[in-house]
Length: 360
Length: 254
Image 1 (tube, rainbow over the protein chains, first blue to last red):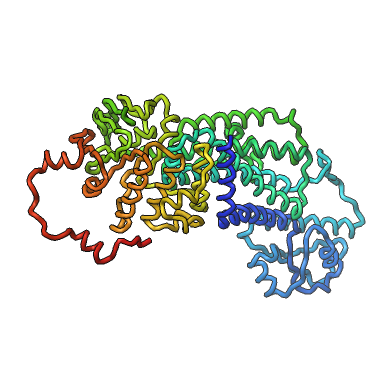
Image 2 (image 1 turned 90 degrees about the vertical axis):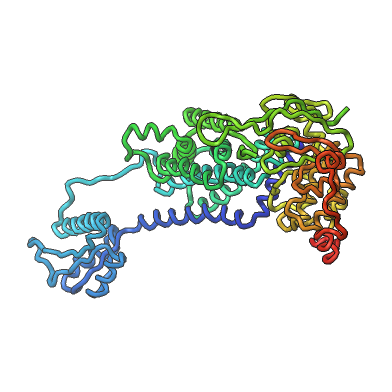
């Protein structure tokens, strides 16, 4: 026990003294979150279009477009507008007619687009059409035949960022845990540190426990910083129990630490562990529903992807954060995490070697 | 009773290439090491010295045979064996970001001992380096620190694997002094070396290994009398090493 405690404290001490990696390990998740968060937020802004030509000739049209909340409108001269279209500042240029349209005569409007930006163009055109329809109803004193009001079944506002942040949290759990165990073990092995440790009566299990405990502490600190920023900068809401969420983060970390240890046992060089690590981490990043929902995948792949270690963690964290899920709703995820933890620890013990069994 | 008793020790490794053949790296050796002696294991690279040492240290399994250390079997009671031995490995690095005193304290804890790092550092002349990190040490200092770490559990027997390989003459002579000092404190010392002069200088008995077998075992003096009785062309002068030491002095350079 004393041995475990001393090793645990020593590991934390070494970690804290490695300023460069402390900085990077806090910096990386923040960068990731801000980059994705920014992308997401900028997507919410209405698309911009530029009006060119004489806006005074058709004042009602110009005014109606300018006050529409579906699109944001700026008035430019021809050259500036084209420049902006090329640079992506606006997605469409609308040439104004040179006279006020007669009440019932059709008016031909000309839109200039950048065909390279297909999805932006389509979205903007649809919104422009909608804005023009609104204007048409006003002019004709007519009312639309159909109207749609949307209502969230969960009665709250779920943004993409709310979907994303639990995913990033799960992703960081995997990343930090595997890097903290697998990569370190290989380094210790290569430098002969493990061999030197096992000259002493140290038991492998004590060593593994101390390492898992110290990594767990550093992971929790890193994730707390990340979560604090998510609360402050993105106002994320956790619907369910925060403690339950923390419990899943801890369980997920232990699972990935176990998987990381088996990687470290399997690989004997730093390069090999990075390759094997990527082989395991990379597909999970895309298949476990971290950054986007899995609905787009073929169903057989969805089933397989749902069994990945990361899928259980990201699903559970997201269910707690977005849907307020409780312990009773998460039985499947708990079973999955438990199974992978057992597999990971079994393989970790099975493959554990203090050296790359050489010939000397 | 000898402190180490080895009987018919065999260790094989898979032969390189396919075919499932195995190389007998240690090929049925038997010998014992007496309490309180300095015992040398000599031999060319690949002779099986390090493997033999690591089996005695309970670091590797054997294929067959028995190894008893202070009466404890290294296979059945490895923990009891590890409690009683101090080991300096051929090459090992230590955790980055820890100082010498912290490393000594940590390794003491691994033996459930509370130790005074400064006492051990003084013995190996590293007191001024107590707050340095292993990476900041010179080759000779690093070897002395390895020996310091091997002493944290106050072992009965100390294993040194090529302790002077790569050291300059000053550091080598200084390390010999250290070995004698530790020996004078009543510890048995087992070392491997490539330097015959070192074996002759330090060892009470030496075993010469080649291709996994022990081909000679006796005191250096008797081995010389038996295998090389005719005197070499008499030197009227010293060796080049004497010249080097005369010119550069015996003071440590690190």
